[in-house]
Image (cartoon, rainbow, N blue to C red; front, side, top):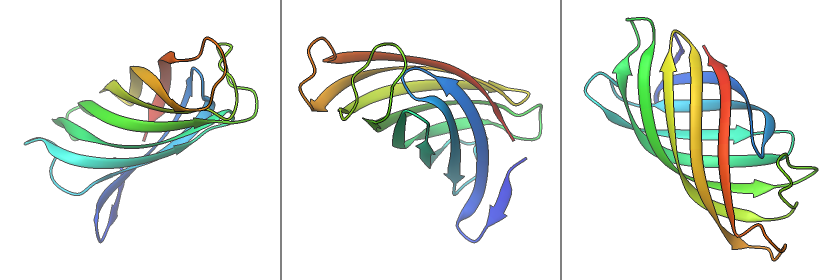
Length: 131
């Protein structure tokens, strides 16, 4: 799975999550994830976008079983899901588990800019497909 590039393997995915809504992502994995490696991700969505760096470990050849932990910056726009205000910036931690291409993720974010009442902390959860 994934596409080889000169910098490593790029893994595309699509997800539905809170507060992002529908999103697509591209994760660059520069080294073999069986041993564990750093990876980089960009993930624009209909209601928010994220950039992340994290650690991934897993077996691409064995039913695409992987797990990843990452630190991410998220910015909301449009009409975010789960009653989160627009034009807010958050930093947080996320965990993702992939099995057979099915991705499950969850995360916690703390607002770093913006001042909408009640949106200081945001919980994120989602499901998607990785390729």
